[in-house]
Image 1 (spheres, rainbow, N blue to C red):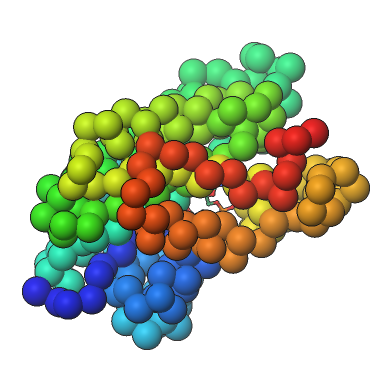
Image 2 (image 1 turned 60 degrees about the vertical axis):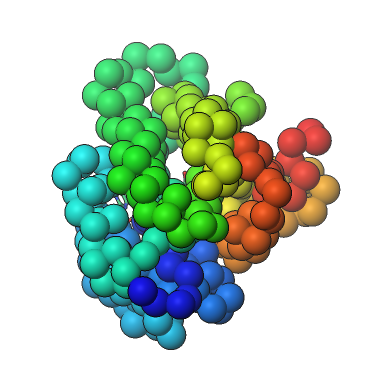
Length: 242
Ligand SMILES: NC(=O)c1ccc[n+]([C@@H]2O[C@H](COP(=O)([O-])OP(=O)(O)OC[C@H]3O[C@@H](n4cnc5c(N)ncnc54)[C@H](OP(=O)(O)O)[C@@H]3O)[C@@H](O)[C@H]2O)c1
């Protein structure tokens, strides 16, 4: 078994996931980079890190989530840290109820909630065997406020936050489970969110949009926070104070 801790970061071919992968690698962990579609970008992220491996898998499919975790353990012999970052959304005004039809709900919940769940279930025995197993789920401030790109997305993040508390209670003391709830972060996903970015620059205490590295810092803090579990840490530049 490798001596170094091993982290799996789902959805790490770009944005927050790529920054988390880089931060964990810089902290000395071996990292598995993952994405569903952007295979070349994922391979490039892995190649840019000192000791990383790329695995393509769509976490919304149970067999692929299981294969992803199996490939991590096959490649590195252990799994200590799981960062459930992969997520999806649709941008739908909250008042347009008809536009958020069942297919939109299913698509978002399949990735954000069920994907997070089945990746965690597959990883749980390995995390427990690690002796220092940690899960960090990437939520959003939309999970606790009437905000976010759509109502199904916001509800999916609320579900992730409660899943975090429930799993912390079930998996302790062997595995700690926490979440990070970012505000607006500059990534490919939010490149067109110029109206929200303007509002954030104008009125939040930090007067700037967040960077992927801001979220990666919080993830690393939770990985190292040996007595914290069931917690949700906001990384929103103080947006929740408004
Ligand atoms: N940016 C923000 O302002 C913000 C704020 C709060 C929370 N978040 C959360 O942060 C996370 C990352 O967002 P981001 O802004 O960094 O977006 P991003 O740059 O678009 O990255 C999303 C990543 O998830 C992957 N992905 C999507 N569906 C997947 C699936 N089914 N299986 C495996 N990988 C999948 C994408 O790769 P493929 O497309 O190739 O699959 C990509 O690597 C999401 O959970 C999002 O909800 C973002």
